[in-house]
Length: 257
Length: 322
Ligand SMILES: Nc1ncnc2c1ncn2[C@@H]1O[C@H](COP(=O)(O)OP(=O)(O)OP(=O)(O)O)[C@@H](O)[C@H]1O
Ligand SMILES: [Mg+2]
Image 1 (cartoon, rainbow over the protein chains, first blue to last red):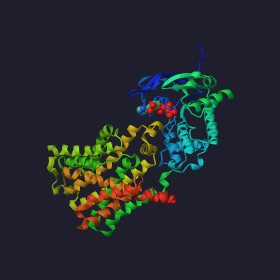
Image 2 (cartoon, rainbow over the protein chains, first blue to last red):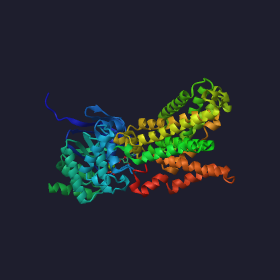
Image 3 (cartoon, protein in one colour):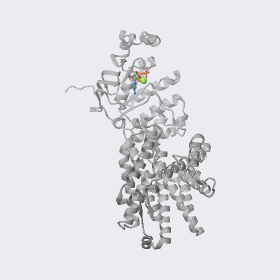
Image 4 (cartoon, chains in turn red, brown):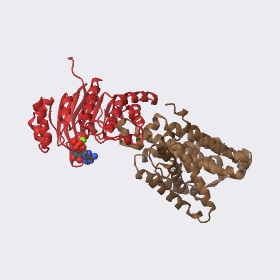
């Protein structure tokens, strides 16, 4: 047998309907281990819903999700994360009345490696240091600002020691400095060998970090390719026409490269 | 984190032990009976707190475990002539099993739906026992005073059972502390803060919630056995009194839900207020209205209760107040 690139994640014909609304429509793609795959698409295209299906928040109406060779379609989220697939939330979900440390420890305790409290604390301290949350360690999570809460989402997911992470708009709402810092963090995580699927509206940042990009529109996968290919794809530009600003930025980026 | 070193736990323990020894120091039987009720409330409130305060699930019908444990124990004592210690354990097990079975069914419900379901369960169990001959139906069961002879007579029995209640109250405090600072407790608190996020983080929420429910049911079940044994009779109306359930919630909320000392403080305060109200003819009949009003005021103005409020006010006291 020839040496093949191992696909850590395979999404096969996934459809998710909410009553009459088809939020995700027959989506198929593969994600090779160690890559960063960008997922873009206009508002309401079904990106977050696709994440929810991949990590088990919703069972797919049709199709299959295969992670590290295991069919995880319809699994509960807590079983998915224990297999090494962690995620962050677009709308941050801090455990408000717990400290930052406790939030991150919970990620380590219950994530992929199922650590006891003591070890979880060591991991949490390490991860908080990495994400620049160490000074906020004993603050209540509810008192953090938006940028810090985004970092907390990342920290919790990272503390679970995943093989792969789903990042849902971790750059949204951040200022340019914060964006640059976060991009740095994402690249470092990948250097540690973690595969990443990332949803992002901040186009230039996404185009910079992604190895490949896929595009959803009205639940359907309309394009797949390198960032340059995607930026020059007429179908993609058309999909973004409803949002001229985005389309413009997309094309500017293509010119720049 | 070696949490057993925190003074908070030892303070709680010391308070219970000092309170528990007061009747011996004063040699007063009236004091003993008052302390008995306070310790009972502390143990019930601490147990409820594991579910209500840690996991964030409001059980309005928690008294069902007290009643079921009481009934099973009483039946064993009165009809089967089982030794008291065995009856107490059986009461605890019965409540645990009931919680485990119920957990699978109603812990899937969230918020108000769960709370309503727990009321439904309490009423259903009461109605069942009301119509169940072997347990005495609506009349209940009684023991002859002669049963106390095996325990050295009624007077000795009252002391013996008092010590057991003190022991169980200490157990409730230790349990509540151990859970709070465990990996399991962290999972429960994650559920309380955001159940969906907890699931995504890997908390097996169905089993964690069931476990919390079971742990919160055991000591109330055991307490039920002692209470009704001392009482020398049991009847459905007494065993499954919904008002007692509501009072348990008031105690937890008053002291501070989710803290270890809160239920202790809340139970003691509430019992103090209640004994004052009972002696005042004006308020005697308004007890429950008062409990409701108190609950409303707490939720509106000090939702974190006495201990929670002090904690947020004086951050330096975190290790002392827990
Ligand atoms: N639980 C749900 N029930 C019903 N409809 C839903 C649900 N979740 C999402 N939808 C719908 O599915 C569609 C896709 O939503 P989704 O959140 O996946 O979009 P998105 O691509 O993440 O958008 P955005 O860029 O704004 O985050 C939308 O029309 C949304 O209203
Ligand atoms: Mg989204």
